[in-house]
Image (cartoon, rainbow, N blue to C red; front, side, top):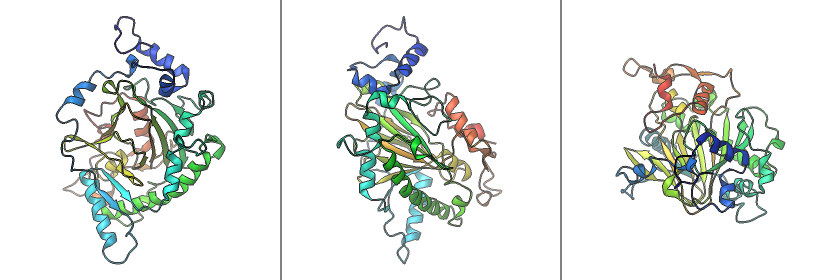
Length: 378
């Protein structure tokens, strides 16, 4: 592969992408091969400009995304009202918040992330670090599969980032457990059972924060789809040249993110990038594009990114409440009628979630210029 400091003369991007793809070993395969300089396909021309610009990272270190304690949710008094108000403020101002005391045991979270340190523990990290031959059977660019693994889903239409990913469409429909990699099958199933309960709690809080009945978002099928993404970010030899995950928004209703303690996640807020410092035991919750659409811009889907780093690996497990490409004849979604008035008319037309999924997976998008939702504006 062509390294970063080589002349451009013989560089053929499509050929380089094809060569990497054919290894079926992803970014981790490059690290295992002893790579010391980034292949040119990973080098982002505007990276240094963005990183060094005044607005690229927060100098206000005392500012952080809201942390919401769910521990008092079912207590008597004003606790629930206060939590709902915090969710409302976070959805409107940040599009991001963290939740603690969510009732998912720490042991379950550890099992999803800690496989690298204890060889016999199951987890997404262990999936990525198993023998390359075992992973190759899951490597695919076929996004209609329920379970697959690759490096950079939007390989040919976007910047190539320093990460590998395991994708699992966990809902809707019955999932055959044998489709999941055996090395992390049991913990994914256990994690999913816990996550479904948290997802419904979050949708209740978001419904109430919008002034709707608690079951509203559940009743319009916002919890029907769960798309799990297990991202693996190996140590990068030249992190100043690339991204772990470049600037983007999530396309679902809500994303529930579990991350390890390595850090690197940043959110764009009031024209600045802010670090999201890992908080043990917490989930990071963010509003997705579909939630912004149905709330008619009341809740905002915020841009975020992951820095490439020399330390690592960084591992995260992201579960997005959304359908995937399989749901061609799904429900139509538009701004919720109860949120629309003469003074606040609908901003978006009705569409299927699969329309947005296809757009994101097949189109070159520049999130620094505009949101993919612009394609669905009235």
